[in-house]
Length: 199
Image (cartoon, rainbow, N blue to C red; front, side, top):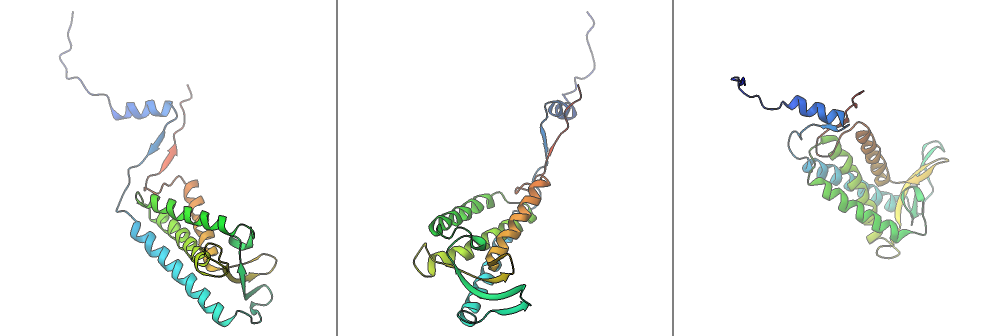
């Protein structure tokens, strides 16, 4: 019997990836760069402070006063105490929205432990800052702890009255959807569905 005298080559990575492709697996890149927790915290603090400052200002200057026209009757500034969620929804569920906001903050903080993506850090920072802004109102404003009414003051005709925390939450949510649609993960990896073999 003839024996092979050449070196035995190990199975190639290409063969493994080809087998994975046949099974419809996903291709994943390794995380790159430093963790982005600092960016998340900076964005969250800025969003929170801007929202807090704007609420303190409008309560001091605009509450119990006539609305100020910014763009005719389309956009005005007027203070409204909102017991519901963003854009005035769910007026009778104040304590429920307080609990939801608290849960969102906990989830974001857990994700932050494996956060390497800059866009995700910005998106989660906006969500965290907005959630903290409205949660602060829930905790410290009248009529009671956990039942406080959120200060809304940006009124758009035929739409809603909202605040800057609501805007941060919406912008962060839209960015999260876009990043997820593009296959981006918070840990910096990118997942792409590999086409299955035609066989």
